[in-house]
Length: 105
Image (cartoon, rainbow, N blue to C red; front, side, top):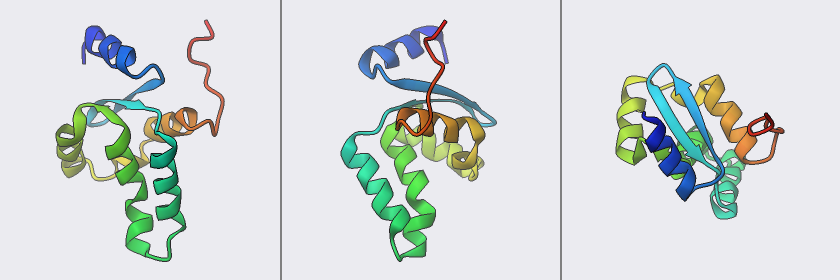
């Protein structure tokens, strides 16, 4: 992913994080309140399949790059990508669960 592509993504979505994973780069944006609520509902569901798919569904909602089709292809090759440490850290930062050091010099 080029610097220009990252800059373009950040211009459109100011709160983004770039994740370097085994499958390549992901750019994630902060979820909307509705997207975050949907995630929480799935996680708290009695339906085990919904719980298991909650993070993957959230990733599809917030993935700016490589987009839905690109993310689907990555998950076909790297099905555990959602558990990647950088992805989990980005989600925590983008949802306010942990403080981010990005932009603090």
